[in-house]
Amino acid sequence: MIATVEISMYALTDDYASKVIDFIQRVKKHPNIRVEVNGLSTQLFAEYDYLMDVLKKEMKNEFENGKAVFVLKLAGTELTKEQLPEQLK
Image 1 (cartoon, rainbow, N blue to C red):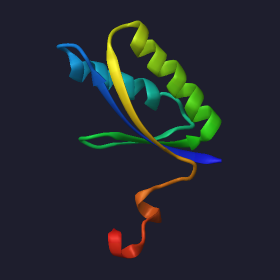
Image 2: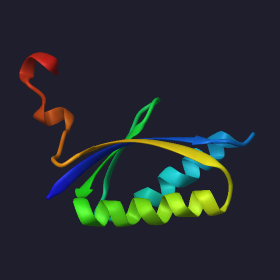
Image 3: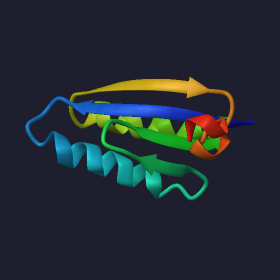
Image 4: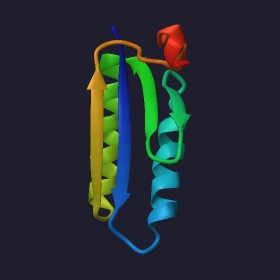
C-alpha cells in the first residue's frame, strides 16, 4: 500500500533552518521515497511500512541530537497533485 505523509519539522534551536534541511536531505537519500518540498511542509510518498520505518529512524535521530517537534498528516493512499480533480489543478 502506498502512503502519503505531509510532515513539518520545527527544530527548537537557533540553527533551525540547517536542521530542517539536513532532515529532508537524509530522507531524500532513501531511494524508494518520493519527496516534494514546499515552503510550509514536505510530502513523502512511498510504501507504507518502508515510509514508517524511515520516519521512525530519522525522527529518532533528531530527538537524540536536539529538540524538535514534528507535525504529520498520514494518508493510506497516494495523494499527489496529479490525482486531484481537474477543477482543483
